[in-house]
Image (cartoon, rainbow over the protein chains, first blue to last red):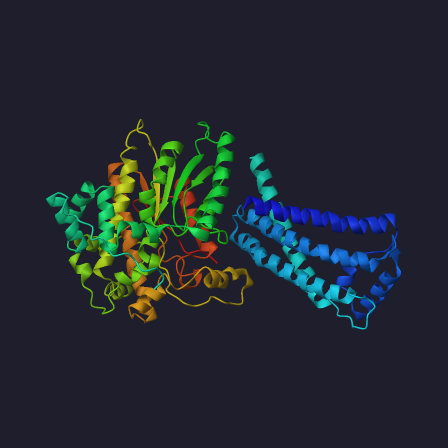
Length: 178
Length: 404
């Protein structure tokens, strides 16, 4: 079990560093506007314009679509990592949460983490399809509906985890004061 | 139906036992023993005798009983995940000087039991909630699916009692011995004409001695008891002997301040009335996602419902009443054991009575309450250990219904 924990946290950390590092590098050092997340939430026209723009923008002799494809593929590892991280974190917090309602909310994070991961996989498949052989003669599919649900659930889960962590810290400091 | 073909029973022989012990065991197995004789028998039996008795009750040889009662495979791994976490936290507390004699409110607790004390991962069970208390260091040997028989045979608690010298020993067992491997089917009388309770003076006394504070529904009880066979009473008396043997081994070493385990407090629990069901538990509340999940993937219906269906007891009310009668008697048996040991050393045993607290809609599956009910029960354990609440009567703490 410990090995699984280490594996998942490693997936989470390394893929996060890679994804964030790639974006920061392109934006800060190459001074190019590149934010893969906006692609997820774009409508048809915006998606088309972003992909066209990325197709015409080159960084180190490669179009931005090339980097976006790599980003999306690495995101599959990130999905595995963050799903595991959410489950492990909410489980840890749940095991210290005395309030039954908060305890139950933290338990709810387990299936939500899996659902978020699955939605993210669907989203990535859509984006890879859109970017495949761009600009080919296949049409574009927007990931907006899937991504919107994914981000809403993500915000909900993060809010639960942050508040639960805050509750634990507050109780810990109250205990120390006493 | 669920287990591989058992080996031919070896008909455990009791002829080598002395005449009086033989007579009492035979009377017990025939559900024809007086209370005085059961009291005599419990003083005579040892671990070997208990092994023989269980073979006679289950009509299986010892090796096979141990095989079907063993917790192994994925369930064992999941049990271990929780126990490793719990015991790591215990060790860290001990390393931090938890056992400092100036902190009298701190308690070292040893827990042995079944899934009410260790439900794999998803549910917050009783020991999970108890472990959250800062003034408790909990060492857990509990395993979901474990039989009381295994706990007594394995004797891991004996080793840990000697090593840890706990302030409190928590024990929960018997549920799997009753319902594991569809054994419940053998405890039923589908004719509905069973008169076995009338033959058992000891069991009758359990009812007459029962305290009126606990809700008792005579209609449900008598309807249920009419469908309970002789084997159930034999098993109930066997539980009595097992718990007597277990607790006696501790209490006799905790009578005086210079005794090894003094002043250990033993806390028992006796479950709530489970609900036989095949329902998948699907509902509109996403917060209860784990109910259909557990029922679908971890099994549901095979403990209570299927054995009753096997025996042709199809009426849902009758099914519920049978469990009502069995759990009612099981709790009274546990209370009786505690009453006896408290007469030996006052305050040595407490009982947490959960009967009627979960209700029909409060179950994750047939046997396990939803976490809110586990946590409610755990709070009574915590109050009992900290002595911040008084028993409702004698040594019994009644879990009140939770406000949902």
